[in-house]
Image 1 (cartoon, rainbow, N blue to C red):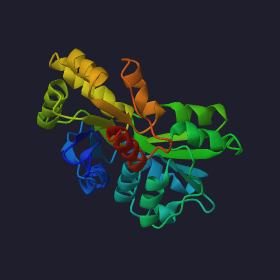
Image 2 (cartoon, rainbow, N blue to C red; image 1 turned 45 degrees about the vertical axis):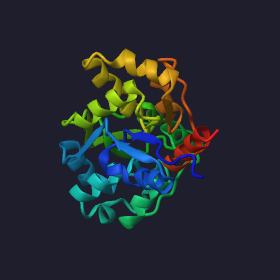
Image 3 (cartoon, rainbow, N blue to C red; image 1 turned 180 degrees about the horizontal axis):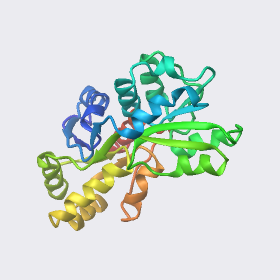
Length: 261
């Protein structure tokens, strides 16, 4: 008997990043409740155009998400040929490295700890003083990585490759909020701090934040992809499951293990 059959697990990550999680849930008999609390929109900003124009000067190019790669190569289609000979590339994790490979480039660095902190730790052993480093990302990203690299003496250029914000259509998120409060959902998963904060913000706007926090404390399971994502949940004293490896697959497996106990 499959003890996961019929369980309902909410996915809050952006719609374009849902497929892997949906497939894993369905393969295990779990019903996915798709409710993106974060919306991504790639954009050709002035800073991204500038990054493309200065690609031949870069000593390092760092990608912190697949979306950053998608946007960079869409708006700078010859980026691969523009890069300075010998320019090294770092990515935040294997999924981002996979997207990089699809665009004909290999990552020189993939940290074992798939976080900005994990990536920064590797750079502790690399001399980046005076080196020019480009990072295409969203403005909403944390400043841990660029500030840490600047402290090491690097010349860091941030390019806004995409925007991340609240979903324009809040129908699915409102349904999620009701499902959490009513206990119709067995668990909620989060893959970034923004997916958490946006849910709290939208719940607060409808006067339901205290209700969903209470439900998460008293019955609805909560899983976060890593400790950074878990922080805003822990600040509300919500019990959070965190996998040993910071991947969607590992997060869902840990959740499944807890569900069948």
